[in-house]
Image (tube, one colour):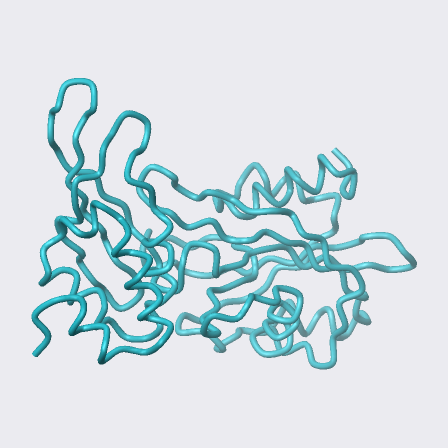
Length: 261
């Protein structure tokens, strides 16, 4: 059984050895108890994104010195990292914490599917589904988290895969992919900054469009249905939709002149 980082690094993958090296250069990490260090480096491989983000953290933030990682509470999808920090101004010591997705802070994407006819955007698509965490039914954008090892995330390809697999729209081609940047969902308590997008595809025929609207989809753990509305109604949905991804997508599309205000 490993008794220090040097011994532990021998038994892990080359990529994780690199993360150990990067983290070992951090003063706060060297001050972290070895049991917590070992806990981190024996996490399953799909937590490498979280560990890479951890290695990018600084020793000081806005007048706070990071002393050490006090605890890491691990779930199936993420980690609650609890740090001991100290105020540089008055030497007061306390804790700061945030949650992280195991895949890393920028491994997700969410966005709008837009239907185009004769060069003009005519409709938009949202999912309507129950959300376990907030115990509510909401309208939401289309997206997910991606865990393809350490490769760069190809968002257009991932979106096309989602449209084909989850929405059952086979052989769909994305005519225009619009990168809408990133969004910091809750920078106080979470480090997640997923990518926002809009994907423009051809408007299906009337019968196909009606089938899309009527179908109950069971391609995710919680079933959902789809709303397809004329683009003129998008501002009605801004008034009644609370999902931050949708609101951010609409704001950026409007600022770019792609949808009318």
